[in-house]
Length: 261
Image (cartoon, rainbow, N blue to C red; front, side):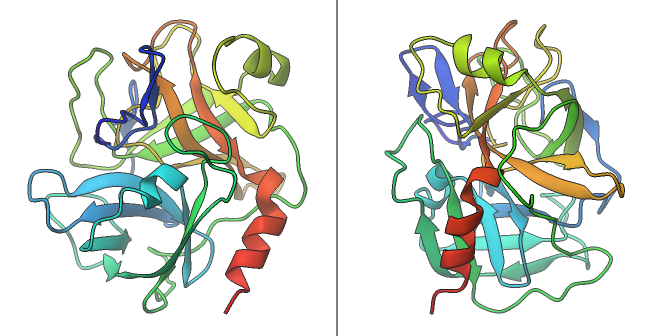
C-alpha cells in the first residue's frame, strides 16, 4: 500500500486501503489456509514487492480494488498460492496481467465502486493450494462476523510495519445503518460494507487494499462479500472501521466483464 494510503488520504484523516503494505491485531494464517488469496506484486520495485491483495474468481480472473489496478506498473505480477513474500515456495503460481477493468463509476482515490478485475495471461492451475472463492448469489448486506486476510501493515500508528507472512483476523460487521450514517463527510455509499473492532484492536491497514472480506455460508464455505477499499489513519482508530466494496452489488458487472472477449 503506497501513499494514497491504505488507499489515499481523505480530508486529511482517512486512508484508502492503500498501497503500502498485516492486518492490525491479526495473526499468521496457516500456510495456504485461504487458497483463493492473491498477492499483487511490483517486480520492478525490490523494496516493495507486495502492494495489494486480491482473490480468485476463476482460473483466469482476479478481483481486487480499482485503485490497485490503477497502481499497476509495467512489471506487475499476479501471485496465487503465496504465504511468505520474502521466501516464495513451490506452491506459488505467477502470472502477468492480460486485461484489466476498473469499474466505470469509480472516481479514484477514496470513493465508492472501488473495484477492479484482472484477467491473467495464462489460467492458474487449481489444486488444494490455489482455487477460487464463492460469490454471493444476490445483493445483501452481510451480518455477524467476517474474516479478512492480507499482507497489510500491522501498525496502529503512522509508521507502517509490514509482515512477511499472510495474516488473518475475524472482524465484526458493523450494522448497515451505522455503516452508512456514522461517518458524515465521507464518500460512504450503499454499496459499501463496514467491518472492524470498534475499539480498533483489529483492523485493515495499508497493503490490505483489494484483499477479500469473507463470510461462511450455511455449508461452511467462504463467500466473498467485501473487497478492502479504505480506512482511517492511523489504522485501527477507535470508532472507525474499515470500509469495503460490497461485492454482492456488482454481480452483473462481474459477469459482463468476465464474459467479454
